[in-house]
Length: 421
Ligand code: IMP
Image (cartoon, rainbow, N blue to C red; front, side, top):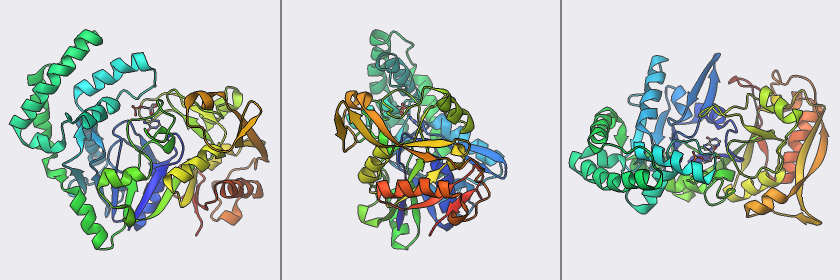
């Protein structure tokens, strides 16, 4: 059976910690979209580990990890990550499986991403994600399987580079790339990843048949989804739960549980609408208490209050069956906690999350002010041990979104997690 873990906001919800917690009862953790734009930060035994591509399950020795066909694979990031994990004494070989069908990020994708960013102002991570997905859908992308044949790779690269170099030179007036150097680099890459590449669709199919437990791990968040997010201020893939089916080749009928990971407040990196954003000291306080700086780019994250209109929308588009609430401890020092429960547009009260950016930019959030708990949370072993104000905060989310909150993270360490059954 498959459990999907999705980011329910704008990414950076702390999915890595939740995947890590569920990995204890899991056989396989499979990543289904995005690339090295993601950054999953895990703290175990006082060590902070940041993973960009390899699923968080890799920290559990008996869990297998899959990078699915929906991911765009950056060889440079992959190598760095494997080396980092091996240095920490974590076995990667024999446990990591990469789909033949995953598309490969090329140096020109990163150059084009940065060049286009100057015109578009999305605030991308510059990791080449958008251009790699453009090539995938234009049917000119280079997949992991293409690396297996030198001639196929060379031919595809030459065709691609002719177009990309023209774009880089004529349109973006930037550096051009050398075909021979790229062919040599990617053939070398092929040799080094050969042992990891396999038919992950069949691997997952067989695991489902055998009754194994698979966690499908999403990157980014639902509001950054290319179809359902705040377009065009989105990433170029489908972080929503449907992406798990196409990005791994698993049927919707295999999915039993969809865990939406939501932070107890909101953050966003990059540009785009953010109704509950704070531009005052409280925003700065959230950023510093929550260490809200991008784990991939180091950029300061924009911070604001919890937005239940956005979260309820996310519950709907993902089919979330339960919420994992993270970073609740970050709110511990606030005396009042505004929670957004509605949007007002002029004299109108909007019932649903707007479909366009100008409307989202124009809405005024309506808040309920809850009392803060103003004491540390990290020693609470059970939900009932949380301060009553914290329990009320959780209850409001459940009432508004109509799904249970089953996991509550009260600190960065693995054991700082309240589990409700
Ligand atoms: P891209 O995915 O690099 O193309 O960036 C598109 C948008 O998604 C930008 O606003 C990024 O800041 C945002 N983004 C991409 N990856 C992440 C992530 O892992 N967490 C949060 N935001 C992200």
